[in-house]
Length: 158
Image 1: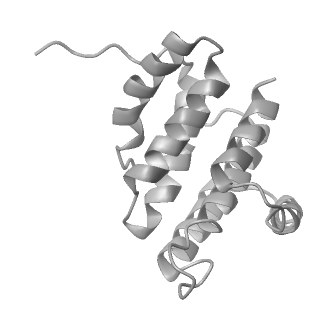
Image 2 (image 1 turned 60 degrees about the horizontal axis):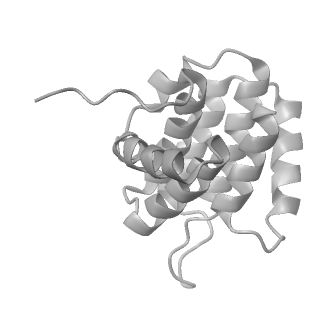
């Protein structure tokens, strides 16, 4: 069996997507609808050509479905800006995964995963407080979580 070549995005971009995926897995569930939506939005983020977008969606599906340990992924972050971006994305993910109105906005598994993420990122307390405050304000907007993540990533990669 031939090995599939890696997707045509940078290792840095791939690592960030895998961290988002790992946080989405924190409650032990990643719905295929969530994956499809992430793949659609992320492929548009990384390419303007329809054919390349389809190819990226196929390539990235396998990578997003892998539930890799956060420790391994966080250790690959190179800058404080990447660590802050990951904190933002992690916060967005855990605040968006309620599947029914009866569930809490953040369940205990997600809260534990977020606290682990905060610990692994080793950011100053004032940065964490600022990001959480900004993200709390942003959660009142009408955008979906994946759209918000794509906008955050788009701004970061520019």
